Amino acid sequence: MRLASFNLENLFDRAKAFNQDTIADGKKVLDKFGRLNKVFARPTYNAADKKTMLDGLDDLGVLKDDNAGEFVRLRQNRGKLLKRPHGGPVEVVANGRDDWIGWLELKTERVNEIATQNTARVIRDVKADVLATIEVDNRVAVLRFNEQLLPSVNAEPYPHVMVIDGNDDRGIDVGLMTRFPLGTMRSHVDDLRNGSRIFSRDCPEYEILLPSGGTLLLLVNHFKSKGSGTQADSNARRLRQAERVREIYEGHRQAGVTSIAVIGDFNDTPDAAPLAPLLAHESNLRDVSVHPKYQDDGRPGTFANGTKSQKIDYILLSPELFDQVENAEVFRKGVWGGKNGDLFEHFVEMKKPVDAASDHAVLFVDLNI
Image 1 (cartoon, rainbow, N blue to C red):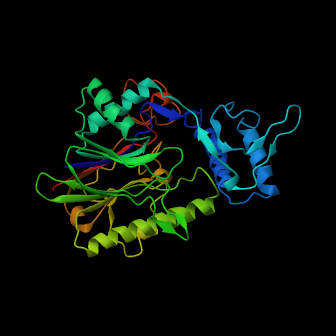
Image 2 (image 1 turned 90 degrees about the vertical axis):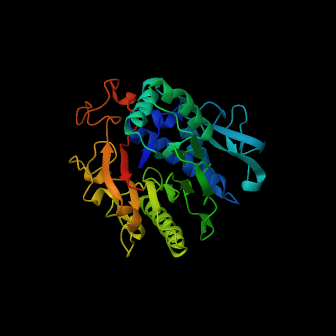
Image 3 (image 1 turned 45 degrees about the horizontal axis):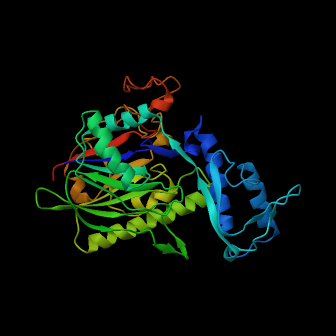
């Protein structure tokens, strides 16, 4: 059985902020977007909050018109956040969250068609039996991709597709495509720590019913990125997420479940303190990239050019599964490597960076189960 993790960034529609010339440009927009939505959620607005709102809305192009922004729109569904007098300065008239209902919303656009086709080619060539999908919009989008795009590149669609909507207000979720039926599913979107939701997206539990009669339990994750907020805040949130995943994992171990995989984009390196609950602290989870049967291609990373600092995608296995590893690899043909795309082999259909299937290579493992 082949288990894989893949960031499906390019399906059909995608937030325009993600489609900038550089990752840094997109992060600037997303940082402002996330910061303002957090300020909007405060129960009361002081003078500093209102100035932050006005400055941020101006930067994003929606200060004078809800829909004028290139990347975002302002939703004011009930009540008013702003007063826009003719010839006068815009004012924040809401004094707190209860005075209005609304939020900032990211605008979307169609993604590069070649990139979507290359995403399908990656899945075709990897041939995973169970594929954890990271950075997907919703189940309908993945289902449409599965039923329409995969056959167009001579790939067999998956009979089972599942996505549980998570906490990310940009609609970036995690899910699953599998050739085996699903059993029990459980979401952790409402898990709390100190009154705040732990997971940026979710940590869904998927029970896979294997042809052998056994089961495989997957915990699919996409931890907090380093792209928005301060480093200290993002590190602290990834640590809370790793701690909670460890708790979920240990709970299943104590209940007698042995075949467990923790899989996905953890947005940090193996030696980083936020991942210690999973990779240190007497954890018995093992990263497939340290298995003797892992096919090392000389690039330790899974993101972009594959350098050591870009090792952020993982398949962690329980000891029983780690003993069943037959092979593990990284598949990079859908990634544009280096300035000219020539660091490693890629699809001939990829002529420029925008044609890439993803910034993330596919990590996969073959298990004898």
